[in-house]
Image 1: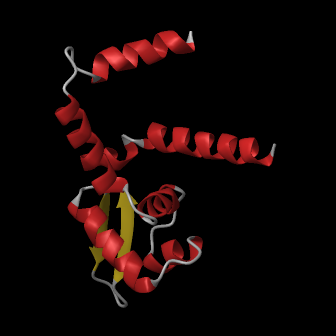
Image 2: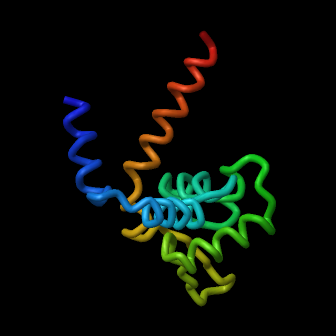
Length: 124
């Protein structure tokens, strides 16, 4: 059954005949948007309910304030997150995942699953 699902996905995603240039471009686009050391942990943090800058920062060991700020701006530009500013005193800034961001939630789950399996494999 697993092989059947894989073949369906292959037929849905890959063109016939194969267009390697298009496939490589799609991979590069994906890596550009979600690649790097911090983007997926930031997305994971936001999707787990951390909305404030400091909460996100505290939930990701090793990230610097400067790096988090830079990554959040880039992710907002790529429409993965939404930044909402409430003009109160003090100003309230919250970050939320967009529907576009949630659209690759299954990919992130598969990556977590693969990572856990890989770690177990290395323990053998």
